[in-house]
Amino acid sequence: MAISVEKQLCIFSGSANPALAQEIAAFLDLPLGEAVLGRFRDGEISVRIQKSVRGAEVFLVQPTCSPHNDNLMELLIMTDACKRASARSVATVIPYYGYARQDRKAAPRDPITAKLVANLLMAAGADRVLTMDLHAPQIQGFFDIPVDNLTAMPLLANYFQQKQLEDIVVVSPDAGGVARARQLSQRLQAPLAIVDKRRPMPNISEVMHIIGEVQGKTAILVDDIIDTGGTLTEAAQALVKEGVKDVYACGTHAVFSPPCLERLAKAPIKEVVVTNTIPARDGLPDNVRVLSVAPVFGEAIRRIFHDESVSVLFD
Image 1 (tube, helix red, strand yellow):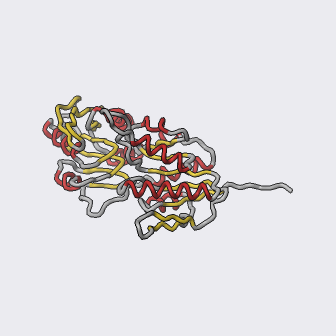
Image 2: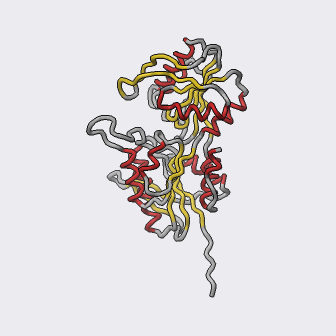
């Protein structure tokens, strides 16, 4: 008797960003799988997957944003639960990969937390990782499983193209973000400028000078993570002093640690465009716009499930 085996696709969400997971499931025209997430009285995380995943290709949506440790542990436990329930494969969809900013030993006795998290995910049983705009692309090499590092650049570029801004210059707020800014400048067919800064300590930056022609232009600052907002606001102020007409800013991950929102509200920035890799906070300033990355992740999941190329999403 012939046995027909059909693949099954299941999507589950942790508690970090259920709204994004629901959008991804809706894009794929699938129900979001039920999972009961709770706590024991002593604070330990409890997970129970409510539907059978035997033989299924499972995608777990969970950014490891704040509270980082809880969200990471929840993802590890959900991965372990699905593997022990005989899922065919488990892909961890991590729109924001926490602990990525410590990706090398910058000083003696520094940890490499990005590699530590990679080890934990693989030890829990993850077969694949989907993420977006890793702080350092080489983090992909920390894994011995496939990693799809998607990008929000096409989404951001399309948004600014629709605004039909004139005389644009794309600006990297520091030397480390030049490659990222170049991607946006190529998509917008605009020149590139760089803000030369130094960082005397974490979360504190000082602008030295600006490399490139910016006077009289509309500047678009681009970064991957907007944390305390110091880098963007100082760069915006420096650009205004250099005679920039208008300043826009964009970033993939809206971490928005205090006092970021207060800084953005007061900064000479007409609009700050971010995505929902991290759930949007309440009380965002009027100049902050949030774009959804659900179609990007949804299409990537669809292509992976059907064994199609994902590279088209980078075009």
